[in-house]
Length: 342
Image 1 (spheres, rainbow, N blue to C red):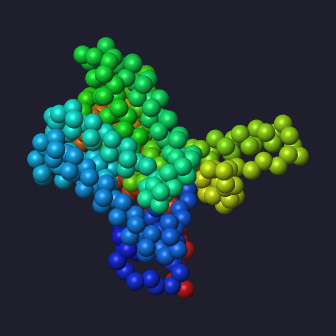
Image 2: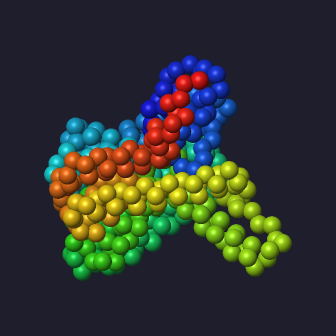
């Protein structure tokens, strides 16, 4: 949920900087207050977070998972941390438990504003959320494609779809749990999973990655520019959920992607000196920068990052922090004016 959001919930309001603090902490291209007071917004977000967490613990206990396992698995799911307490991650648990974890990984990847609308009985408005529809659509398409592609590796199509759903949910929400060695899956499945690493979850969720909303904005901006070439005098606005997106948000999205590509390229170049193969280096940067966890090849779900030297680990550590903090808060540390005394 974020340290700053937690502080906003418990500390008294001071000045007008709290909205800027929440914007700095919240993932995605933009964030707004759910209610007039920022402190109340923070409390609502934590209320939703705690409710979903308790619900997952209860459902896991019903599946006969030990209490300690249920708590740690829930913490890993809710915060998209993904640390399993067993070497097999979630693979050693029953299908019921894997399905529960799959569902809650997807739920925690949803923009929490949607849950607020549902609490306010604005169901129609909640499901009109364009980002939510794209998010669920991408998951559905990926699950079906991968499930069909790996059907011969499992006892039935149903089992293949269940395993596909778990890995897709884990990767797109950047949770990092695993139930299978997806590095051994066919090339098509592995390619789709790598693409999902970059997409990430929804803005305003606990997930990492670039975020679905940014890709929607970029796609609509591209569409707008294409129409501008054909109709030079035409005026076309970029809209999301029927509302015009401010130029500042579009600009911030473009700048974010520029910074993202630059850091990714520099990180790849730094790892190239390690002598490891391209797939390992590429997915290592993708997995850390997008806060996924496992990558492919020598950093696959059954491997780890111990093969890298200490300098390389520092690069990947920087990527993990930059990805979690949405890049700019960390980059500000390297700007001279940040340390300038007035």
